[in-house]
Image (cartoon, rainbow, N blue to C red; front, top):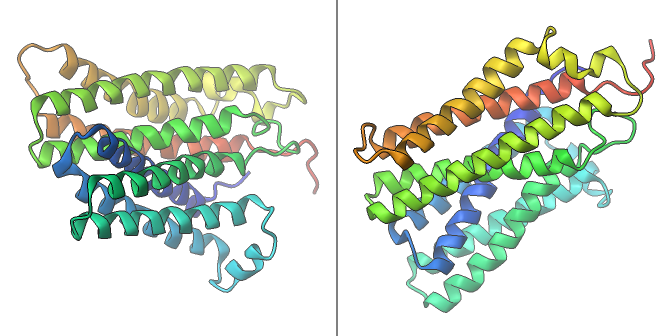
Length: 282
C-alpha cells in the first residue's frame, strides 16, 4: 500500500498536540510546572492546527470536509470533531490562564481538555482498525498511537520545562515519566510485531519477516528501533541515573523529540506499507 504522507504528518502533529495538552492538564491538577503550562498549551494548539492543514492535503479539496461530516459514524468524522473540541478546550484554557481565573476554573477546563485529548489520541489509531486489512485489524494500533502521542507530548513539555527553567525536581519527574512511557512504547511495538507474525490471512506483503530481516528491516531497525526508541531511551535513562548531568536537560529533550518524531514517522510509513488488504485486485 502506498504511504499516505499527509496522514503520517497529520497523526504525528495531532498526536503531539493531544499529548502535550494532556500533560499540561495533568500539571495543572498536580500544581506543578506552572511556567510550562501556557507555552505547552500554545504549542499543542499550533501542532494540532498544523495537523489539520496536513489532513487537508490528503483530502485534496477543503470542501470535502463537509462530505466527511455527513457521516458522523466514520472514523475520519469522529477525528475531526474531536480535533475541533480539543482545540476549543485548549483555546479556553489559554484564555482562563491569561485572564487569571481561579485554580478551580483552570482545573475544570484542563480536565475537559484532558479527556478530549485522550479520546483524540486513541481515535487517531482506532480509525485504522479495519477487518479487511489484517495488519491493521488489532487494538494494538490505537494503543500504539496513544502511547506515541504520550511520548511526543512528554518530550514537548520536557523542552519547555528546560527552557522555562523549572525546578530540578520537576525536570527529573518529566524525564522519569518520559523514560517509563518510552519503555511502554517499546513493549507495545514488540507486541505488534508478534501480532503480525501470528495474524490471520498470512501474506508475504504483511509478514513480520519483512520488518525483521526483509526489505523493510533498515527502516524498522534504523528508523523505529534505534532512532525512535533506543536513542531517546538511552538519553533519558542516562540523565535519570547520572549523578553529574553531562548533558543539559534541554539537549536531552530536543534530541529526544527529534528522534521520536523520526521513529513515529517510520512506524506510520511501515504501517501503510504493511496495510495490504486480504484480497488484491488488479
